[in-house]
View 1: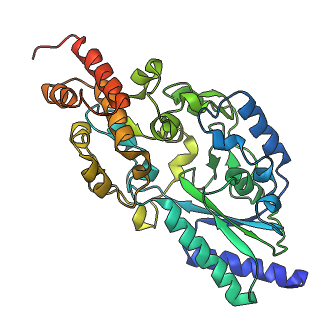
View 2 (view 1 turned 60 degrees about the horizontal axis):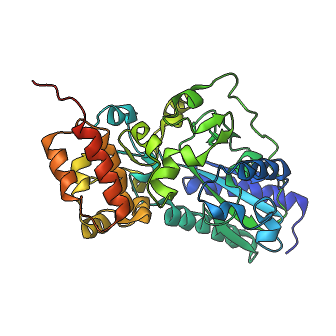
Length: 360
C-alpha cells in the first residue's frame, strides 16, 4: 500500500481520534532508534539484575530492532491505558494494616493482557477500515519488546528513576501496548524530557533497596519480582522487608510526586474485585487451590499459582502481629506438600513465636 505524506499525516490525526474513542489515555508514533536503550539493557543483564528472568537475555537484538521481531515493521504505534482502580488514593491504608493483604493496584481487577490486546486489535481494525488491508501485529507485555523505550520515543512520557514510564499529567499508573506495522508513520516530535530532577523519593521508599541507583533496579531484591516472577523460596534476608505485600509492590509509585495527578481509570474491568479489596491475609491464606483458581479467574494474580500464593501470604503473616488465629492457620500448613510453602510457614512461625507478647 502506498500513501502520500499528506495522507499519512491525515491518517495519524484520525488514529488519535479513534484512540480517544477507544478510551486510550494516550497514543503516539515511536522513533525506532532504540540503541541507547539496548545498551542500558545490556549493562543491566551483565550485572545479573534480571535474576531468574532468563527470557530477558534471550532474543538477541530483537527487542531493540522491531523489524527483526516482525518482518517489514517500519513504524510502531504506542498506546497508554490508565489502570488506577480507586476513586481515592488509599494504598497507604492497606500497607499500614499488617492484617490486610497488599496487592499491587494493577492486579486488583481483570488481567490487562487480553483486555488491552483486544482494544489494540480494535484500533488496528479501525485503521484498516480507513485504508484497507495492511500489515500489523499487536503486543502488550507479550513479546521481546522495549515497551517503555518505544512509549518514551512516542512522546507518552519519560522513564523515571524507578524505571517506570511517567507522564507529567497522569503519573505512572498505566499499561502500555504497541502496534507494529508496515505503514510509514511520522514519529511523534513532542518527546517529553526527563522531569525527575533531584528527586530521590522512589529510591528512598523502596522497602528492599532494589532501586540500587537512579534508573537501575536489581530485580533480585524487588518485591514485585520476588512475589510474582521468582519460583523458589524467597531469600530469607529480604522477607522481613516485604511487610504485607503479597503480589507486587507500588511503593516507588506511591511516593512519586507526579502520581498526585492520577485519576481513577474509566475501564471498569480494572476496578477491585470484592474478594481482593481490603482482604485479610489470614482469610486469603485459607483459600484452597480450587477457591484460589475460582476467585482469581481472569485476573493477573492467577499466573503465580496456589503454592506461590501461599508462600507470599505466609511471609506476610510472619511480618504481622501473630494473633492466635494466625498461628493456628500457619500450623495447619506446616505439612503442606510444597517444600517452598513449608519453608515460608516455618519461617513465619519461628518469627512470630519468638516475638514478645504484649498483654492487654
